[in-house]
Length: 497
Image 1 (cartoon, rainbow, N blue to C red):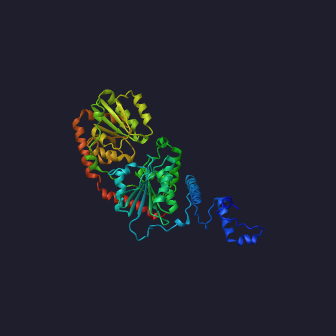
Image 2: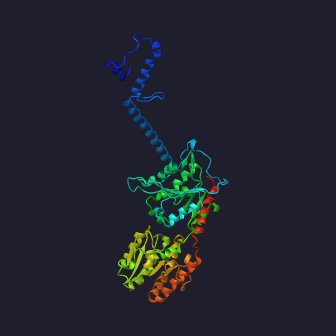
Image 3: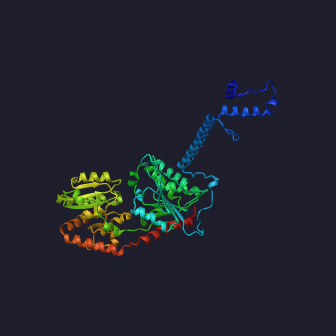
């Protein structure tokens, strides 16, 4: 007899119906005895049998709390198991209920696929930014566009789902630490894009080879969807890799993903060839991304800052925008500019950018004794204002991913000293539309800047010629560009999940 029942008997609320003799057969035949034993079993174990309905409000609340605790513990164990599998590099087992046929197969009659982007580029939130326009304009070529922004938590409030257009949705992770970015993105994909056991997206795109790439890979693995990686980082640059917050994990992720994904897109042909050689990727699976250069927007951009107002001590400003890696050739730029700075105290060099070599470049400026004429600035959200307010741009980078800087400089009419092996060498003529130098030719840099200083007419004529060339020869059809971009993504569907 349970404690509660005995208390009720003492209070006279119920009668003691227990058998007076040890008659087990009579006991189980008595319905009141059976009900009382059932109730006592619950009171003693705190477990609710499936056939019991609790009327007493105190007991009911107790049961609900207990059930909530059990469910919470089960969910925590499930999340921990998935996280462990995720971090150990194994796919997360999918329940049979979620194993459905693909929403879209290559032979599917539906013409438009649904695409899911994983990105860390916060400018996707800025309406009109290149990233925002590039991804959201895919709505004209895909039935649906879903975007997961991998972002650190900025406050207590959870970022709401944003419906940017009728068929474009954006979700934000709001992660509390870096190691949760990939997992949180993975969970958002499960929560927002799984309907009736089927996964909504047909193809997944990741815009980096670490957090976004891992999230996309494991989602694609679980739901049998093709994954396409877009590489924008120079992971072949050891200095750049070591400058990252977690270089060992990043290096592991690069090798893990590039050896597994079946569809890769690179920024340059040089990077494409390097991946094929190092990772054995078949040539048909890796392509160079189409590029778009918004020359008109650059030309008409209203500057937000003026370098001459910021540095009134300089009458003539040389600008160098750099990713501060070995391929940027920033050390050569400083050496080439230094004779001019020593000769003219009112000439200044403004170095803009972030990267692994920044501290070395700052030390180099001190070693040259020119720290008062060389100013370092972090990379801003836009560099057009810098280009429009400087007098000359020096750009010797060997990285084809930085070609847009040369084109934007030409569009705003700033005289240039540029690497003759890059896009500038294909478009411009030395001593007519720009000064072209080898990336390691320090003397050429010095002579070119000296010419610009002493010949105002050349500066003006070169700038006009360069602008005319890029507006004539560089494609500006954004719709055509997005169509090529969409087709490049859709080709990954040929590889299946």
